[in-house]
Image (tube, rainbow, N blue to C red; front, side, top):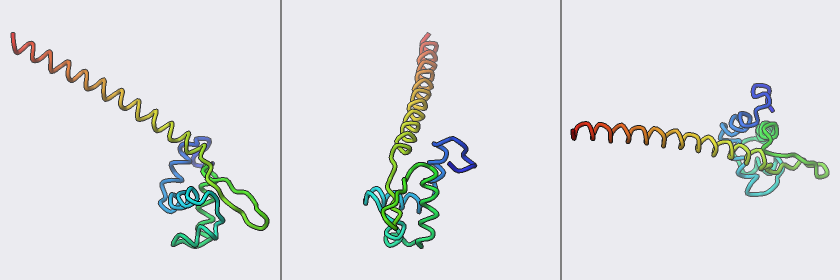
Length: 120
Protein backbone atom coordinates (compact mmCIF):
# COMPACT_ATOMS: atom_id res chain seq x y z
CA UNK A 1 0.00 0.00 0.00
CA UNK A 2 1.12 3.49 -0.69
CA UNK A 3 1.42 5.75 2.37
CA UNK A 4 -1.24 8.18 1.15
CA UNK A 5 -3.78 5.34 1.02
CA UNK A 6 -2.87 3.74 4.33
CA UNK A 7 -4.57 0.40 4.71
CA UNK A 8 -7.43 1.13 2.30
CA UNK A 9 -7.00 -1.40 -0.53
CA UNK A 10 -9.84 0.05 -2.59
CA UNK A 11 -8.24 3.51 -2.57
CA UNK A 12 -4.88 2.00 -3.56
CA UNK A 13 -6.46 0.08 -6.45
CA UNK A 14 -8.40 3.09 -7.71
CA UNK A 15 -5.31 5.30 -7.49
CA UNK A 16 -3.20 2.72 -9.31
CA UNK A 17 -5.79 2.29 -12.06
CA UNK A 18 -6.27 6.04 -12.50
CA UNK A 19 -3.12 6.13 -14.65
CA UNK A 20 -3.76 4.89 -18.23
CA UNK A 21 -0.31 3.35 -18.69
CA UNK A 22 -0.80 1.18 -15.59
CA UNK A 23 -4.13 -0.01 -17.00
CA UNK A 24 -2.33 -0.91 -20.24
CA UNK A 25 0.34 -2.79 -18.28
CA UNK A 26 -2.33 -4.69 -16.35
CA UNK A 27 -4.20 -5.46 -19.59
CA UNK A 28 -1.00 -6.76 -21.16
CA UNK A 29 -0.32 -8.98 -18.16
CA UNK A 30 -3.88 -10.28 -18.20
CA UNK A 31 -3.47 -11.19 -21.88
CA UNK A 32 -0.06 -12.82 -21.40
CA UNK A 33 -0.46 -14.35 -17.96
CA UNK A 34 3.04 -13.33 -16.89
CA UNK A 35 5.83 -11.18 -18.29
CA UNK A 36 9.02 -9.36 -17.43
CA UNK A 37 9.29 -5.58 -17.44
CA UNK A 38 11.35 -5.85 -20.64
CA UNK A 39 8.69 -7.93 -22.38
CA UNK A 40 6.02 -5.43 -21.34
CA UNK A 41 8.10 -2.46 -22.48
CA UNK A 42 8.49 -4.06 -25.93
CA UNK A 43 4.72 -3.93 -26.39
CA UNK A 44 4.13 -0.44 -24.99
CA UNK A 45 5.43 3.01 -25.96
CA UNK A 46 7.15 3.38 -22.59
CA UNK A 47 10.70 2.71 -21.39
CA UNK A 48 11.53 -0.35 -19.34
CA UNK A 49 12.38 1.89 -16.38
CA UNK A 50 8.92 3.49 -16.56
CA UNK A 51 7.32 0.03 -16.73
CA UNK A 52 9.23 -1.01 -13.60
CA UNK A 53 7.90 2.06 -11.75
CA UNK A 54 4.34 1.32 -12.90
CA UNK A 55 4.72 -2.32 -11.86
CA UNK A 56 5.86 -1.19 -8.40
CA UNK A 57 2.66 0.85 -7.97
CA UNK A 58 0.54 -2.06 -9.22
CA UNK A 59 2.39 -4.39 -6.84
CA UNK A 60 1.82 -2.06 -3.87
CA UNK A 61 -1.88 -1.96 -4.73
CA UNK A 62 -1.98 -5.77 -4.81
CA UNK A 63 -2.82 -5.93 -8.52
CA UNK A 64 0.31 -7.79 -9.63
CA UNK A 65 2.68 -10.23 -7.99
CA UNK A 66 6.39 -10.53 -8.77
CA UNK A 67 8.32 -13.77 -8.70
CA UNK A 68 11.88 -14.59 -9.60
CA UNK A 69 12.57 -17.08 -12.39
CA UNK A 70 16.35 -17.37 -12.48
CA UNK A 71 17.72 -13.93 -13.24
CA UNK A 72 14.35 -12.58 -14.38
CA UNK A 73 11.60 -11.04 -12.35
CA UNK A 74 8.27 -12.07 -13.84
CA UNK A 75 5.04 -10.30 -13.02
CA UNK A 76 1.60 -11.85 -13.13
CA UNK A 77 -1.84 -10.42 -12.46
CA UNK A 78 -3.14 -10.84 -8.90
CA UNK A 79 -6.92 -10.71 -9.38
CA UNK A 80 -8.06 -11.04 -5.75
CA UNK A 81 -7.62 -7.35 -4.92
CA UNK A 82 -9.29 -6.27 -8.16
CA UNK A 83 -12.16 -8.68 -7.48
CA UNK A 84 -12.63 -7.22 -4.00
CA UNK A 85 -12.65 -3.70 -5.46
CA UNK A 86 -15.20 -4.73 -8.10
CA UNK A 87 -17.37 -6.22 -5.35
CA UNK A 88 -17.16 -2.94 -3.39
CA UNK A 89 -18.14 -1.00 -6.52
CA UNK A 90 -21.08 -3.36 -7.17
CA UNK A 91 -22.26 -2.92 -3.57
CA UNK A 92 -21.98 0.85 -3.96
CA UNK A 93 -23.98 0.74 -7.20
CA UNK A 94 -26.65 -1.40 -5.51
CA UNK A 95 -26.93 1.11 -2.67
CA UNK A 96 -27.37 3.97 -5.17
CA UNK A 97 -29.97 1.95 -7.10
CA UNK A 98 -31.95 1.44 -3.87
CA UNK A 99 -31.76 5.17 -3.07
CA UNK A 100 -32.86 6.16 -6.56
CA UNK A 101 -35.74 3.66 -6.45
CA UNK A 102 -36.87 5.12 -3.11
CA UNK A 103 -36.78 8.63 -4.59
CA UNK A 104 -38.77 7.41 -7.60
CA UNK A 105 -41.41 5.86 -5.32
CA UNK A 106 -41.65 9.09 -3.30
CA UNK A 107 -42.00 11.16 -6.47
CA UNK A 108 -44.63 8.83 -7.90
CA UNK A 109 -46.53 8.89 -4.60
CA UNK A 110 -46.46 12.69 -4.53
CA UNK A 111 -47.66 12.85 -8.14
CA UNK A 112 -50.51 10.42 -7.40
CA UNK A 113 -51.54 12.43 -4.32
CA UNK A 114 -51.55 15.68 -6.32
CA UNK A 115 -53.65 14.03 -9.01
CA UNK A 116 -56.18 12.80 -6.43
CA UNK A 117 -56.43 16.30 -4.90
CA UNK A 118 -56.93 17.87 -8.31
CA UNK A 119 -59.73 15.41 -9.11
CA UNK A 120 -61.66 16.43 -5.97
